[in-house]
Image (tube, rainbow, N blue to C red; front, side, top):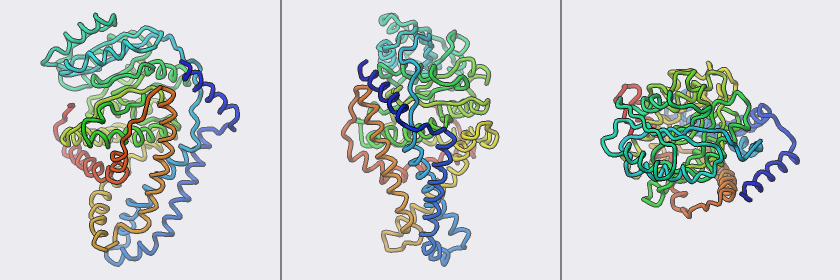
Length: 449
């Protein structure tokens, strides 16, 4: 508790000594810095562009270099500038008493549901916690185990059954049973830090009235299993966290992930509950943003989830995320978002397929060609993206280290995983995302797990 008090004191001192900069001003400052960086990249790339234009048409050369260098450089510069000037506002309270309901949608989670419930029981939260386990047609003893463990722990556990396949069906089956103002969704393989519920509810109660959801910080719990999990540990710790912080700064977190997020119950009901989508949490969040509501992110509300440890499951998960993004773009277009920041942030996703396609079909072959002395595609300006990425990771690492100290956590030693994450992770992610785009375009079958 002392670390919590110190954290709040530091936030108040920082707010008192720092000059207030509005969110809109932070946005435009970061835009100017990002545009300046991109203009420098364009000037430096002219010889590279001229060489590439000798081999292919000029418009194609511009499109390739823009996808490899200009746009990624602009996006990284915008993120770095935003993170440098970001200041997390202080909580109005760090001891909320609001009753909440945690909904766990699960299917065949007999082995893990008990540990998930035990971590809920360990919360230092003073309000009443109700738990609803939405069993999506399990063929094992998931429901029975949930009831038995709930009774042993003294938790208020209600088990509801939904046989129609699909996570959204399970969540919507539980929604009518929720009687509290706020609802938290939690995956059955996700374990809460003892202070997670307190911090995520405190952020919601400290936020303006038009905030409809708060995304928690999800980190990796099984990074010791193999090297693939070690790489993903850094993706969650730095990559996803940096994106969440950026989006949270501009009050438009694009995914209040189902693994661990808090929502205003009535806001969910007004938009018709969870949608029939492979990325139900993505579409749900965009619909909330589309009703003129903001979505926050709370880095101190930490949960630990299991990540895929096989290439097959990793491919399924990340291609599903890519499909979810396309689904969200189909449901509500970025220019239809009523809030300026949400229009800009969702607009990013319009160009993500283009960037992934260029990376997969141009940059990767260009990298191979560069090893043989042919620098047609992978050129000198490409290197400008690397220092920005390293700076971004360094800024996030320092911040995450501070968060971990506040929560009495330790960062695992995982140097080789970090090196692989920085140098090779995008080589995996872009092709997988491209596969997801094609799956959605062809309307192939959905797989929840």
